[in-house]
Image (cartoon, rainbow, N blue to C red; front, side, top):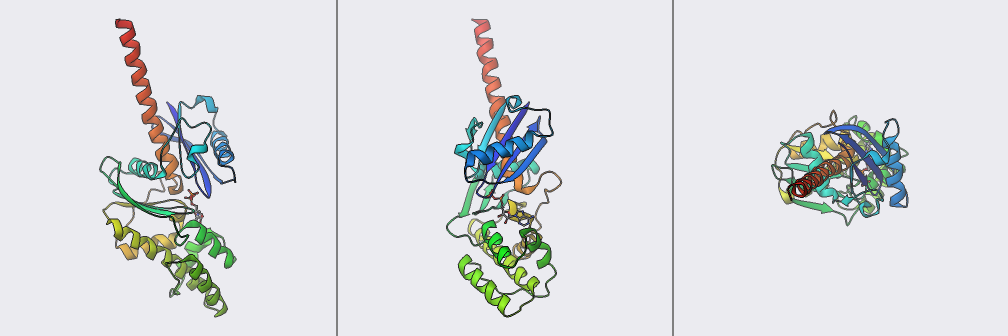
Length: 276
Ligand code: ADP
């Protein structure tokens, strides 16, 4: 059975298409101003290269900030539940998911069956989010993809505010004026993000195993510094799924559950009608 999850985030749109529990195809596109356009582009990209059409997909679940504006989704589910379900699919042992997306970050605690037990979210300030990383990368004339590898070359880390993105940007500009080596500034930025995330984890308490999801979880500097602070190794899911696709993956798994439920209901109704 073919199902799909579509995650329309503040920064990117993602689609995962699954066939009988396996990932068949996926896509990742920059978000457009109109959520519907992001969803359509992400879906078209995911369908490209397969011999599928949209009508071949039995059930689609939407998630993310734009989830109510996905024209082909039959149901929408919060990204918190979807990241939890995606993580559970990659490894049922996972109990804590740290999702670092474009505009917010969340720490999600899971039950052994993958359901969300509790979560904390940082949504009031850009500090520690992908948007903050993009802005600081731009100020340093770097691409966000360079922030991780560069920070691992630093001999020391500059001090950058973990509490406020406006202060952090001012500090970065001062550090550049002081001619502090670029890798030390970048290490300071990544460490500030790690410090903010570690503080959020403390609020809900950490339970192993732990996984990172969302675009910023591809930053090897943030991973390393957060591991140091939390004194734990994160589960590496990259062989199973791009961690930025975790929400879309979870949505696809929910889609499969919904489709199965619908099929069972139809079968029950049919057998009642036959027996009547
Ligand atoms: P959302 O779901 O909120 O749209 P994503 O989970 O897609 O957000 O994350 C987007 C963010 O991920 C971007 O703002 C960017 O900072 C970050 N990002 C994406 N790819 C990388 C990468 N290779 N290295 C570091 N950061 C990355």
